[in-house]
Length: 182
Image (tube, rainbow, N blue to C red; front, top):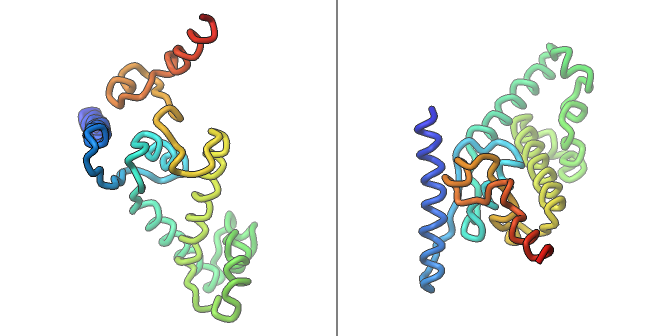
């Protein structure tokens, strides 16, 4: 497991360095997407910051598919009236169980009945990621994705700093401190 993780870290650093070299030479830099194991909003934030300004997208597959499958199963249980207790405490309808269902119902009116629970689950998951990413970016005082930089994240270990090219947490503000202290 460790060699694979190290190989992935090296690939990310290499991709950034290749894109940066092209940019410094005035060459065309293609848009880059990072993918692999990204499931939550903090992963999206880190991937965009790690590859900034060259990473323009984050690829996700398994997590959104999981959201669809879980929502589909929950929807089938609601219809079959076999809703597990841990979902039942939120209600026994699609609108009650899925946070974003009422928004979709207001938007689509009568056509809401045609939207599958899986699609509602995917929409709900994406809205959660959107809101969470906005909150993380706000905390970093970055109000647009293209404003993220590599300085918005730090490496927690010297090994991670070396592998990624990101500043080690203990050195992150060292230059600013030196300027202040003179």
